[in-house]
Image (cartoon, rainbow over all chains, first blue to last red; front, side, top):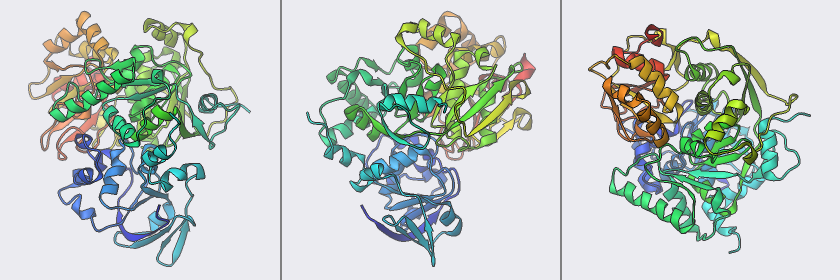
Length: 165
Length: 419
């Protein structure tokens, strides 16, 4: 797992739902690259290409709300996005992101400060996200759950911890 | 110190004597539901090389979202799910004829008061209607529960909703929930357990409780609880579960709630959610006259028998506006059969409805797609942009009564005019 993520910000508002992230008609796919082709396309023809070239999604409250579709986090990963920083996450997206090995950071203060195109630096070991010359602490994922992220997601974690046959 | 329902059930299912809000536990669900997503969980199982299930009796599989298969890809995915169910001896397997997973599981006696249930669908909160805790998870996590029997869960804090009084005529559980979602917002109950009490609960049918528990997801609820009572016992008995088969769990009188919210039901009026967020609610009076092209009566929120009856009563002897396509999708085969036997389906068809096979239907984009600029009124639980077709179409949400009135008028209409 990366412990240091530095990259350019693409910014969304509040309540970005998982239907917007990936529409139901594409749930026939589970591959990151295939899903990424259709990510956010309900927002207009400039998507998803507009997002390529950004590294970090910064969003407001309740990111990933609505459907429990795991492909929402998979599609974001497929776009090459390395982390999502939000004021808050919907719980199903939060779990799915961890299970998919996608880094998520809950930090309303930095969301308020950062604008599109800015650079953020996320230090996962320290629990600190830096914007300009200011650092913002964020709550760490519980240690028992972090093991899943560290192995790159739940499938890898399960494989490594399969009950004896 | 008293315990909430979430604290009690999660303590029992994790083998702890006591747990408190905020703790993380390893919980063993009684049931893990997977729907159309089942093939994805099967693919994870293959990928990791797992060959054994923790307990096949705890799996339930219902092929509901796109049923029957509309493309070869869906057919192959459904075949994967069927073969898996056969190979592993999954007895709670329901094929494309059965209907929406949530309703099918409750109708077949697979949801018991006090149970913990997870599944590949955010609206698993609906099991709270029978006094069970239900919560949605992704397909990889479903595989994990299949194989290990458990998952980590944070014990949520709880909000206590107290509902008093009775609904005014033509106002129902859907209006109540749209009101609450509008008031609290899409994350007003985020990560929290929603418990419903008050003198209105014993008056509410189990069908209305299902609407309450289903829609509570749209304010972010992790799980929902409505205390089981005589109506619950009767519902369960008529669906094959005698009271000896389960043990209801109730919250302590001195349980700690983060907040309490009181609603007087008689104050409520018909509500609609406007495009493109469920929290964007308005009283019907603010939007009366908005033209609609399609009306969809169905979904796990409002595709139940009582919902069809409400619509049929308003539509009976009248006809749908010729500019409107009224699509009726019964929530399950049992509901469809009941509506067939009672004449409700015939009445709806005679009023101009197109009746489809049971399932998720247009709510999941399975038929009933909309073209650019079109407007749909739906009794489902989501109006997100593009959910029912073009990103340039829009969706309003309402109760079955408001939907029936609007289908007649060809525009959003107040159902109180028709009673």
